[in-house]
Length: 81
Length: 81
Length: 146
Length: 146
Image 1: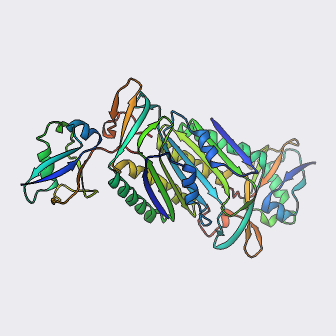
Image 2: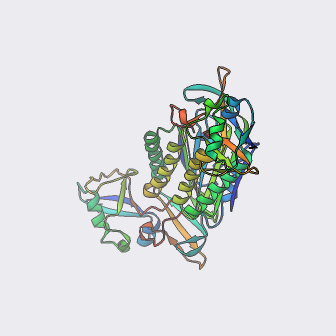
Image 3: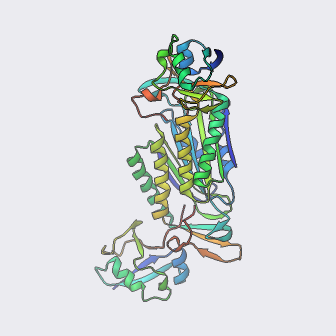
């Protein structure tokens, strides 16, 4: 098990009550595994069926592997413009 | 027969060599009659098959009757913008 | 607020934008036409616009009225410049505001398309080779500019 | 020339327009998003934008690169403001220039649509009744603003 930091923004930060979460992940974990782990936390009701996740500032797909050095962020529905 | 003044612009003024033409028209003449009369003049080669005519600052249809008090203009293909 | 004008001075696009902005409008769409240095493949050093001014003004007003009704636009202004213009000068500017973006964008586009179809204004290009020619858009080989 | 920026100061739309103008471009299309005084039927007194700034900048650059390739655009700039904004303030501005009008217009429209889909920026509205809420565009009853 290793810990990764997940950055939260806007409504997600509000719901989880923090701007960053530390999550323990097994080796070879994917984005989908990360999302599953997040669902056990208080405030996770805010997450839609398939939340958008960014790895190293790019949108990631669910089966993408997570490396310990990755910059990980959960992306709420965007509302810029 | 009565005379009406026809205003010319841009390429039409250049081709006819004047900014205004005086044309003799029979009573009850239409826009189409006016165009037919114009075709006998030097420079009329510039006119397309159906030149646009404006009566009192609005585009006119070929069978529209011309009154002596009308403001009449020939409208070359527009190129504003 | 709807306003149309044929002008023989510089067009201030910033002023047009300010004019259509409002607290209820979330989107402003602006179209600006400028004088290009090339036309139909030939070098241009400037141009002049002639208008049948009274009719051009009333046609422009008619276009804006149609556009405002079609897109439920509250604020729409357009100015077309006439006279002698240099390369880069603004010949036409349109600004439309709306609560939402799609009607604002489609409105400004509609207005420029209609201007090019039916406002009695004519462009005479001054070419690098010294010749001057009235533009006939019905005879162009290139996509119509701008 | 392509330029994208996330800024925490006022957006100068006139400067953006000047930036994309060129002697070869006959058309400039501009889209400006401003803060409305009403949202989803509720009175708004202001709002704040939060961004995942580094990603927002790279996504905005990616959108402009895609747009420039798709519409063969030479000059395209976009700025999105973040932080606290008041009613009428410009939140986003896009300016695109092209030899011809249709690609310029479609390019600016493409960019605002893509920004609304995938640039990680979030809006929190400050309502007249004192509440503050993060906007969820996937849950709106009204057409999305602006």
